[in-house]
Amino acid sequence: MRFERIILVVLDGCGVGAAPDAADYGDTGVNHPNTLGHLAEAVGGLNLPVLQSLGLGNILALRGVPPANPPRAHYGKVQPHSKGKDSVTGHWEMMGIHIETPFPTYPNGFPPELIRAFEARIGRETLGNYPASGTEIIKQLGMEHLRTGKPIVYTSADSVFQIAAHEAVIPLEELYQMCEIARALLQPPHHVQRVIARPFVGDSPETFKRTENRRDFPLPPPHNLIDALSERGIGVYGIGVVPELFVYRGFRQAERTQSNPEHYAALLRALHSDCAFLFANFEDFDMLYGHRNDPHGFARALAAFDAMLADLLPRLQPTDLLILTADHGNDPTTPSTDHSREYLPLLLYSPAFPEGYHIGTRATLADVGATIAANWNIHLTHGEVIRYVHL
Image (tube, rainbow, N blue to C red; front, side, top):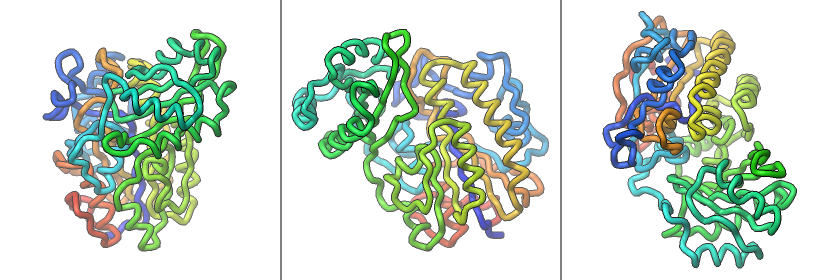
């Protein structure tokens, strides 16, 4: 059969156990990750009846989520292929792009000459220039920023150039313009994956809070599945950070929603659109809870997502295919606050399936893209079609 519509939902940060190359990324010892497995133990068990029925507990041992017999979805896991453990790399790989050379990272901050060039172009000096948690660095430097008007520049273990600024000190449009300046400046060998605007509000370290006006400025991707679908006249609807990760190229409709409830509301609107491929990222697991080592918040977000699935599944038609996966891990129970190199869950559901099958361990997230592409007779260079979806 052919599906008339495919819905790809990314549970940002929801890894299912350390990948074989986890040690290459520093994810070993006390930072040995298993995002969902460790999370379930930390909170005394998860209650996810819909994900359980689809087969999440068939992918890994998960306290509170036993295996389904039979599961409603085809189930398996993915070993990411590309070099990197971040959202850009993960989403690009899903669309058929393999990154063989890691993007540059800056564990000691950016080179002084690069910062000087950036300051010259924005007409202001900067603060920071070291790796940090976004919430911590505004506590550390927020008051000086309020006093001086200097934007806060920082990075992380990922390939990012982040600029934090108080919305009352540097208006959003000016902050976004600074990010565009940085994006143009950051050329090889300093071609970081993303420049990110990180606006915040508050009047003291105790009240500083990042707002939902974040904006990402990634590198333009190579030609990929979204381009190919668009060239065939197949509508693509991007939700959340997804359109930004692909510089809005190839999308018939795009909604830059900022939270899981907003993403779900947009997904319901997308179901009534003329688009055949819906691509959504649900980021709260990663952004609000993984990076902040908050397993209980992470568990609540999963339960809320499960309730969204309970509402979504009855809306699907036999000609729909729903794919659930993740882009990387982010274990909230380890000392690290960074992304983790993990296997990723993979669930494929359609009301047309009598029951689910085990689809094994996939060698790359590009198998997701190859399966979607095959539905519309498109061939991708990377990835193997998952035959169990009866294309």
